[in-house]
Image (tube, rainbow over all chains, first blue to last red; front, top):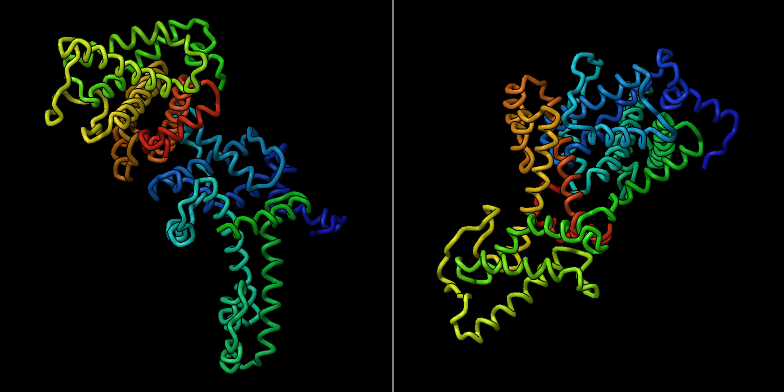
Length: 241
Length: 233
């Protein structure tokens, strides 16, 4: 549990979702860009939700694109209500409102916002969401998986920058579970290290991974309390799988 | 959803009872016909039996105040129908086959199901009743969706999209219809999703018309989920 200090307060003042929330009233001041960045990051849960509603891959992508465009347009036009709370809930709430709109209303097709869908959505959907859960459950799980995926990506990138990519690649499979006996002994010679040093490195990687997950989640909340709640929610969703 | 104004609630509360009950009976006439037909009565007797049943049912329905089935119109109607047919059989027996009721032999499959194409003669009478009920309910919801589209001047769009309601369309279908309607494909995809959503709302509203409260409605939704099929996912 984090302690709410002035420092952590300051920290949340600059997270993406805080920027969106605080600047919602004056959309020209950077909030749309922060929201666009979040929308781009969390495309996958929206896609997973729509796939689980039964839409074909390209159709789910079409609807997700239309939804995110509409969300950003509304925000730029100052007509979006961000309400309160974290981004995960906001996004799903907005998605449900959008999908439950009147089918007879024609979407505004003229003011496009620059958004490009990730290219691996369907591949990830097939690989990571193999159960037959409801659209809501698919959304929650894929949101959590996106947080982890982003943290992994940053961890790898940091290892690359410090010249430890080979060690990262060798140890990454054991971030979640301890390596079976003998594995570190076997790895040590190829990494020109000692088993004990690898064990220490693995612990540091885990610690850094937890920090990065926290940083990713911090971008979707506005306070330390919300961050703690989101961390709990993330663990609950991942354990339930 | 306000259950005090649904038709079956009005019947139970004895407000405008007869009108509400007659309206329900009109909607759910096909499942009664299908049930009687699947019980093996001769085709030319089915209409007469149904007519006699509804006349009696409408006269007597609201007196059955202690019936545990009354929370759900479907179960209540079916129970009444079974009782009615037992009485009818007894009367026919008394008349020693001289009465108006004749059984058809089971190897004859005369007549066709009145509502759903997929009502099979292998169904039990109860299964036929349930499927036919779901079809009548869905038919009513579709009619309302059609009327809403007409009122909004979107009948062409409705006609083009309705084929997407029962089955999941593939990408080629979207592209084809989008071209016909001069819309972008994502606009069309959103419209289809929303239209399905609206249809589900209307189905739930139709279910509410035949139940006394939310608990009964949820139970009815579970009971009919199989027959309603993919409309409800």
